[in-house]
Amino acid sequence: MSDWIYGLSILGNLGEIFPENSSLAILVIILILVLLLLSAFFSSAEIAMFSLSKHRIDAMVTEDVSNAKVVSRLRERPQNLLVTLLVGNNIVNIAMASVTTSVLALYYTGGIAIALSTFIITILVLVFGEIIPKSYAIRNPESWSIKIARMVDFFESMFSPVVLAFIRLAQIITREDSEVAISSPYVTRDEIQDLLEVGKVEGVIEEEELEMLQGIFDLDTTIAKEIMTPRLDIDAVSIGSNVSDAINICVGSGHMCLPVYEGNLDNILGVVTIGNLLRESKSKGSETVLKTILEPTIYVPESKKIDELLAEMQKERLGLVIVVDEFGTAEGLITLEDILEEIVGEILESEEEVPIEYISSNIIAIRGDVNIDEINSTLKIELPEGNEFETIAGFILDQTGRMVEEGEFIIYNDIKIAIEEVENTRILKVIITLP
Image (cartoon, rainbow, N blue to C red; front, side):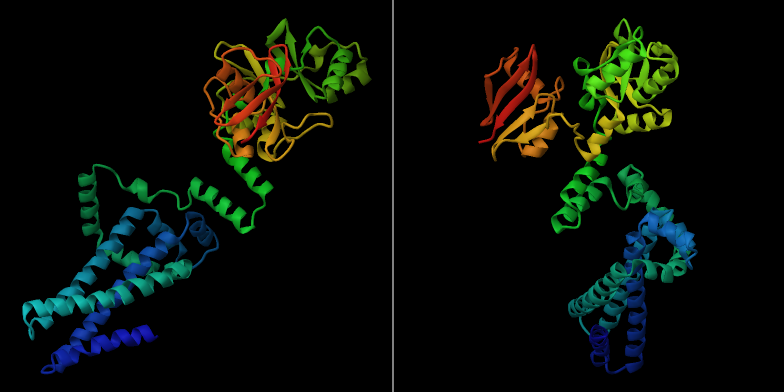
């Protein structure tokens, strides 16, 4: 209220500026007040209308909130709405400056009239045409949008010829359709991830929750090759085996399902599950052939995005898929558990080794098949990721250019990486010593 009294006192002083004609002073004050109110209207409308997210507008329409449909219709053409509000705001602001300068020019020289007009209008527009209305609109975007929707709709219709002309002119000058930029989502993917980080810092989101949510976001950038069980680690059963053989392999490996091959792993015929094996063994005997209980599977390329793969596995009701390279050679397999681990973290069996284990504050034991990005994220270091490798074992082989033996080590940016365990040509475990 005090701000408005201050503004009216400024307008009231106009009577002292031209005392010979008080009626003119009153007319000017009324005209400036009307224009100032319109300036406040256009400024607040711009903030309120564009602060509303699309999902909130849809919710108001669903709830049948008064004028919500008008707001929705206006936001469907954001470029027209924005240009309408800008045109209206500039017209009234320029009109205020012109009226004030013209009146003051009757009583003062050109330079003084312009200076007085600039000073008065700048204060009025900044305080009452911008700061106060925009602050209010930011605090109350929904309620204010609903109240002014029909008036904004009226001005959009009234200014439509001018608006279309300005839009066309802007498109000719910039040689692009600016509708795309204005229609961009109110909340972007990066903004959501930033909010999650802020939530963690503020204590609203726990560390484990943040990692799971981040895992979901990473699904569309992770490919099959990065999370597959490599070919050397695949436990499979031949089509010529019987139910008893398959059960023994399942029990020995700890897997709930097994790929079934004919000849070699490049010719996977399908999958058998432990549940079907036990049911078949109980009903028909352990010597039953696997062909009768074979379930289908699919082949996917190494570059398949995990989010797409998850959707496909859900649709086809598959528990296991085979990953192949560009030549059609089976390189590994992926189960639903592998994808789930990308979200919730490693799900370890009773005897399974921890992938990353701290021996001390700066000495860490790491399995050879752990991905470089997981190591970088956990240890807060920056080992490079190459096109030809994803794991720490691949990184070591890339650095040395040869097969390594137990006891050897390499140094990378003051980080010591020692080979702890090797089986044949495979690096099973390394010890990283941080500086």
